[in-house]
Length: 87
Image (tube, rainbow, N blue to C red):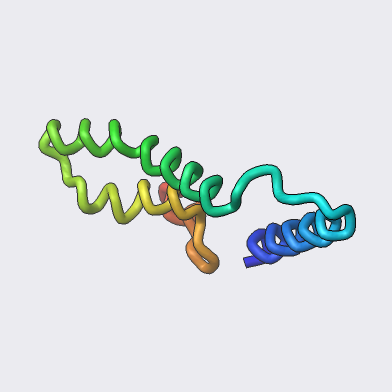
């Protein structure tokens, strides 16, 4: 949760500086965010297609690896413990 709050704080600080300088954001926020979302989703097309045509489970892949990559590690979700192998 801390990185999300730091990111929000940094964004607010930059927004305040822009406002003080009477400067507009360099890109329309909605267009920029939709473009970033497209990039993240586009990165997952080939891995999903490979699994689909290879007969592997796609739903589990979407719920685990794709979700973690596209959404980032969600607060309280500990992927480090999942990746460790016992022994």
